Length: 557
Image 1 (cartoon, rainbow, N blue to C red):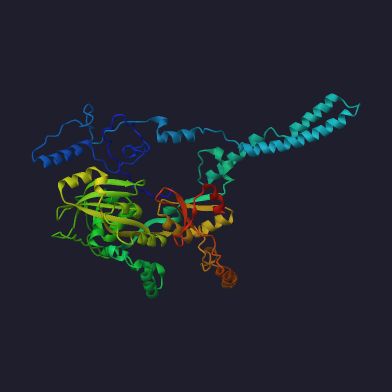
Image 2 (image 1 turned 120 degrees about the horizontal axis):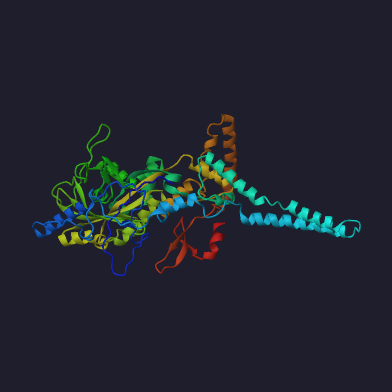
């Protein structure tokens, strides 16, 4: 829904251990390809065999003749078009697309009104019908001249006229009418029986990146190792007095992307999953934006990362020199990738500096996860990461280590654990996503309509809180906000009236704020070393209270 298109890397499955079953949803998800997927690039059987042959030739120092059949499934011939060998696991309505088509074609539940409300209405009508027919029956029985047959018929007519038998049909027609109205607005519903429930919604949950904010990631800069030990708040205040804007002052503490340290440049140019397809760089927008800001690019000839050529408006990308290298690094080749995993919160690569023929292991990921794999965590590491996250930046930690021997290189290529141990910190790279112009107005309208608004995101918690305060999901406690967008085009008299009302409200709320009422405090759920959960204050990082599940509804109020 958000339009974030990050190409996924799929790998061929190796031989399963005896007794291990295929797990399509979790463990072996990277080996499963679903129907309807657009394949951007494919490394076929013959290419894999040639790479294995060249690697064995380099190791043994003699020629190696590749076999004509696949090395794992010898009885299956190679594909005629040089593609991959795949096993079909599900077909027809059992596949993911088939399940969706089956749900659209034949919904599992009938179009009907909500059963609970319908039953209550029928019960109420039945009560009145019984009461009125009992009254008629009671007085009719005392009248000796009245026919008992007609009296009983009148009572039955009262009950059947008060309780309409066509009520379920009317509810179904109302649902179908709602579906037709939605279709005119280009909104299609696959499960019509959920339409009556839609009127009872009282909460709206939004994704952050691409929905509340734009999907354009802008690299701001890198905080190097030298800045970590200093007092960041003092530096920010001193810079703030010179610059005026707090965001500009924060960016002054960061090194621009074109003037990065050599270590940070090594990680950013080597640790990525970008590929070149039909002359265009395809991959994670975050990685593409970082390389573009550094003025580096994926080469159309070799597929390696090289500095960009100079253009009319921008200067050429500059090579970097790692300590101990004789010449500048102007081309980085990726030998092996350990792909990004949301569960592991990191990715790693084994790369080779083509000019100096030296290999490195480079890692990037969340600051809390990468910090666990550093050989020595720098002083102020966690404080700096929190400092940047509180200001709304998306923070990625960078780390590396040189690989000296061939055994270290092979071990890092084979296993992730060998690639990601004893790392050296290279810096924090920061990105920002601008909030959409209409986000604040839309959320305020939803709140006026009685909706509870919340945000769901995979970003760091402190970054999410900053965006939530910016769009008024969390109460920021700021009374000096700008005028709403819908009043910006109003006449001068109306604007003057609004300004006087806002000034009056500010003077009225100032004394109460001095007494200590700062609106709702923001608390964060954290886990301690022993596995226990507790609430932490967002403002001063102090422990507020232990986590008790039954207290959550009261805390939300």
